[in-house]
Every structure is written in structure tokens, then in C-alpha cells.
Image (tube, rainbow, N blue to C red; front, side, top):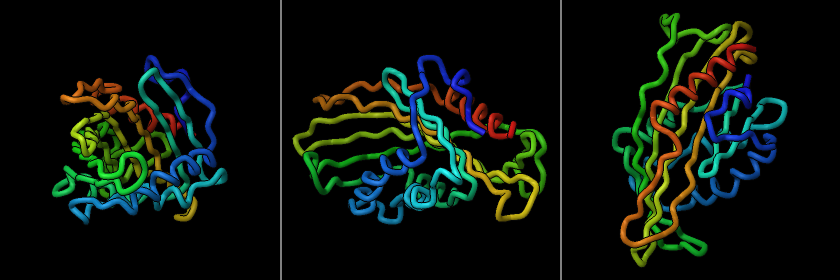
Length: 224
């Protein structure tokens, strides 16, 4: 149900990764994010931490890849992600958030995240309760977002990065406990070095290229 390595965007190469390694790599940053002051307060992200606690080698699979300046992952999870929480915490009043780093070498730095919702792929087979069908998958919900992040140190030096995330809630015929899937794709561009004045940042891909990548990931999942 994952992208084939040959379907990766130009410049990306698959790297070895397991679900256990993904969970371990996410745990520290997620724990730190849960403690850091954020404004607005109601925009604290929750869906990633909730999902990370439920992932294991029996219910999920992951494809990871790298380019010279970005990391990519494609995750399929046999269960549900709280995509409604993603929408609440990255749109509307939460379209721009400011998080203060409270520990480590960058204590006192402020991370400003500007989220912009992107139009998801257009699917065939739209019906009440679903956005469309792909093979045996009925897609009930999709959320695609671009995030432009600026980290500002107390001395005024800044670093910038661009990332993308996309999530889909899908169902296959069968009992409710076994028919739910979450398909996720993320692309995170490397942060620029800290500099003064404001540094230029190169996006890892265009908005359209990311949406096309997400569409390929949905099609790959539907081939199950």
C-alpha cells in the first residue's frame, strides 16, 4: 500500500526505515512540543502524538526517502487519525502559531509557523459521506497543508524551512474494526542556517508537486 521507490519525486532516494524507528524518532520532538508554550493555546498539535503512540509493525508500514535537502515519508496505518484535529490546529485562528522553545541550546527561540491549506486531489466516485473512490478504497476525508516555519533566536538570527503534510481517511469493505486506513505523506525541507538578515529558503517541491505526490500515494494504497 506504499509508494514504490520508482514513484518517488526526482532527486529522492529511498532509505531504510521501520515503523519502530519512526516512532522512536518522533517521540522526543513530540514530547518537547507538548511542553512548549504555544500561542494561540488552542492550536497545540495533538494528532501526531496520538497516532505515534498507536503505531507498530503490525498495524503500519512506512517508506522513507531523502533528497539533498529534504526528507520524505509515506505512512499507511490500519486505523484512524484525528484529521479533524489537524484541521482545527492548522487553519482559521491557528493558521499562524508561535511556539517558544524552553530548553536546550535554543532556549528562548520563537518558532513561527504559517500554515496554508492546499486543495486535495480530485477523485472520481463522489457520494454522500465520501470524497471519491480509488480501487477498493473509499476516501472519506483529506487534509493537505503547507507550513512555512521561521525560527528566531534571542539575538535576532533566523532560520527558515518549508514542509508539507497530507492525510487521508479511507475505508475498505468489511467490518468497521478492520476496514479503516490512514494514508499520510510528509515532506520536510531542511532548515536554512541561522543568519541575519532574513535568509532565503528553497522549497523542497512546489505545492502542485506535493499534491501530485499525495495523489500517487493514494493510488498506491488503493492497489492493495
